[in-house]
Length: 322
Length: 260
Image (cartoon, rainbow over all chains, first blue to last red; front, side, top):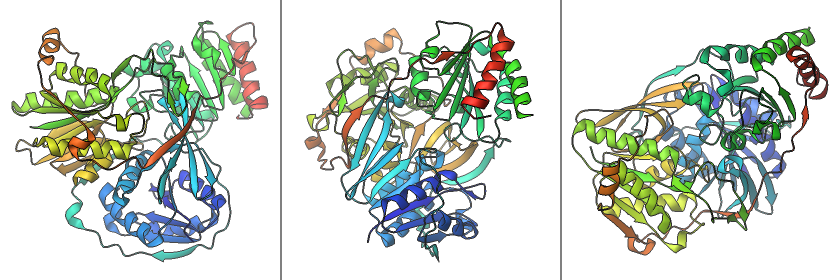
């Protein structure tokens, strides 16, 4: 019976956590769960998918898949999708997923539903809940035809260990090289192991109140204390001032995030920023202006000078951690 | 260099969204050009200026009011525009249908193009799908999340820098191709007063779906909309001074939130 096909994304030699999240969700839908993993060295990673519910794992491996090139990956995935003929296709809405998913959908001649935060099965249909207007509203969206192609925002579902049959099949893909026109000349990754803001579980974010780029160091120090799932963010004011790169920006013209903990330092809380982080599970605000709108959304508000609070907080957390 | 720039009119980012059925309340909204599309328009204008040749054509799908965003692009310096306006699309055009309409409008215009620029996503539906779908429908490559764009003097190829997870990638692609603009690509100009005056006389070709022969309808449907649950202001962290408040906050994060 037609089930779900998930796209398993490989980054830095590992399968993304978001891919395991969608595999776990696919298992809940019932029906067969197939996974398609693409990348140089993907074969060695494939068996991991069985632990999270994959019954069948299609592996596309080879030197031509060393770098992510949209067209090559889309051709490979579309070939697998035509073989599997799934009712639903799920992928994680990571940076790569956002590039990949609409291209795959268009290749298969269907629509796509981007950046969903919840999925409900309703008969043959998946009803997808997704934020719009950077989170100022939510829409319930359905695809009109199969395959229903859906990208899921990272951290929306728990990763659950459920054994699947896990049969691995290596797929020989006949790529149409004449259509693969883009060439990746180089990839330059920042020397950091911080997660992307959209995937981080804890974000320490700074705004205009940070006063300058040099002061973000203490936010980085604070984030490091929370471990490898923490990172830093910034408001538009801090980014536009040139204190942080745009990839740090949280808000309507930046990233929409929903970490377990969001610590806003010196951020007043403009509507565009609040939309981008309003679904965080716990919000802490540190701001000396008691009237700042951020306090209306914060679970815990510290009305004081962040330049006194943050260094003291770093010391206190070190003590708590022993 | 000839370029097509696809723009969308969206509610200003200050807008407080209110729900009505499966859509939003449109009254009282200030409509603007999608902020990411401003980068797309700017890049097209810069390339035309640098290469001292070419035409910038704006294509927009939207109701009558979208002509204001089109005029803004023309006032910035774009040359001509195609406005796809059709009641059939009102609140129902999903990214697939929008891409199909735009692809048809580009083909029907007969304008030659070396590159098509769009914003990386529209800040209303936040789907970020149209660039890839449009490219697929036109049979050319799409490069998304572009923050630097260089084109060869003979316009045969472009070398672009795009944002990827944790860094950037440099990609070379033969033209024509579709490019989606990320913040950082450039600093968009404001329309000048003479530009605004000139824009009033620039041609805007209005087309319906029937004119373009588009039959592709939406492939996804919004069934219902809702507002996020209202967040209540929580507690103020107590303490006589910053140090005491920091200590209490550390306790809260450890004992109550259980994150430390």
